[in-house]
Image (cartoon, rainbow, N blue to C red):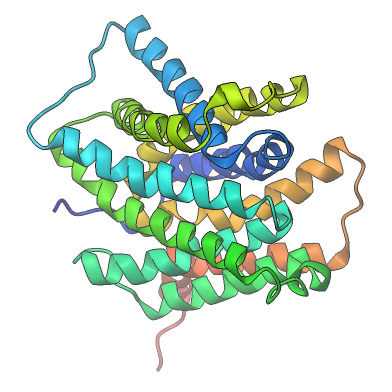
Length: 310
């Protein structure tokens, strides 16, 4: 398997921040849509709409979806790990728990990412800095969200276990997706192939378990949420994600889940007039320290500037 960079460039950090905004909105849109759309149907609609957008981009660029040997089965496995299973689990869980609690549980993804990358790769091994960064980052998320939501942990155990299962899938997908780079498949093609495979898997599940002719049509606000979820939180987000994965590696790419709650809170403050509390600033500071520890460059800079002993 090809070696991956272990530190991130300025462009990588910009992509990471953009992803945090795009995926930060996904919990909000899912919470709106799941009130009137069943979980399997929600996932199918999200994948079909997002896949259609990416196929349109490929056609506009006059490009084909490359299928070198092994690519079709790899798209299917990646779709199961990155779309089908986690999307279903989160959609089902958010019928029971809040999006805020879901975002806390989603922030465990880098923890799984460090473990999976350590076991499955030779160039993204766990280091003391990465472990410390993961602990600091998750602690920052917990502090920022606050005790009111943390008090919900322990209730609705099945829904919370479903979210944790989804985050493990994301971590496995982050490592598995590395195989597309040696195949020479561009990020937009990886995203298109993954979403297409996911939609093919979901179609028979919806027809068997949630036939659309047995349910009322979703209200307008659910359609708006689905379209936003598909175009922004899926199509655009996955193009950026696979680009980041190719340049920064699996462990660094999964750091976006630490930033998602920050984006959600800042967006609420900017557009909904919600007030930022001191604990939220403290949580952001802890997350920043965690990201710096995992990235490693700040620690290396401090070591270089430390004067040698006389």
